[in-house]
Length: 192
Image 1 (cartoon, helix red, strand yellow):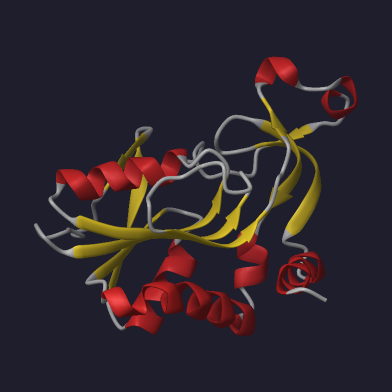
Image 2 (tube, helix red, strand yellow):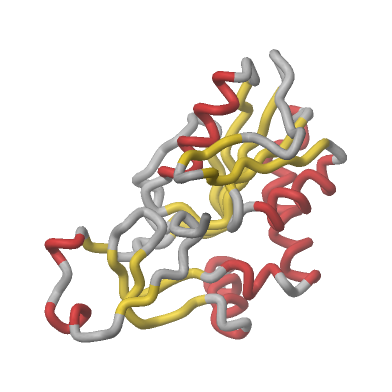
């Protein structure tokens, strides 16, 4: 069994890979959804995946790891633990991604952005903009699941543990068979 198949098997066994009709954080519709929190609640998987991401960036010695809330927080914190650096997160306030709670990025700090799942990369891009506005130096983007199968490139030093071609549709493109299934909105963008 390939490493990719082993990882997908872990996602299925922890019920982190769901099937149904989902509106993703990006607003697109899909028949599958990765609920990474379900797999990351298991310390052995959280640690293993975090080490995989940390190993990619260890030689660059990040000063801080930042993640978009809610999804990336657990993974980002553990990646920061593995790298031995400070970990913070950005979150939505009145619909906008912001850095608050006393967190900050110093001008010139080397920053690694970590996210659990990307489809369009919108939340990660918002976090990257915040880092750049603060004067931070983005070293790269580490991701657990890239649903774009590598078609979304947010940084020239981007690493994804799993790349999948997870089909998604715009609101006006949803096939009839998917439209017949009740919609679930598991993403965090709609939380206040």
